[in-house]
Length: 126
Image (cartoon, rainbow, N blue to C red; front, top):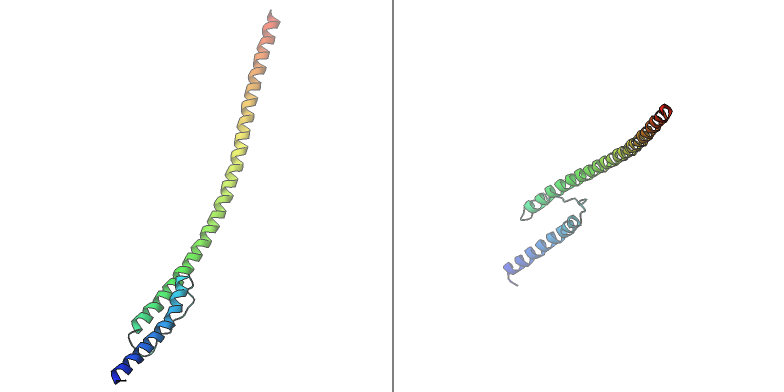
């Protein structure tokens, strides 16, 4: 086999090996798992920019995932607080509406009593 072909085959194998190392990292990222660590090689080659970018991407995704979890927890806490306030308002509304209905009944009873009193006074004067 000529020397160029041997070099090409070696390059293909090395490239294939490097890609095989990166594929599981990309698969984990695709599944929402940002726990992978990417080691940046000391020597620089065609993969160096890709590996550096991937490492930066993972750092950003980890940060954003943590922020997302924090915001989700804050939203859950706010939701609980709002639900408690809604419950308090609903209880207050029941009390106020009950009071208003009682006031209406008392007003009607008062009107009936006034009417009866007026009739009693009218019958007394007759």
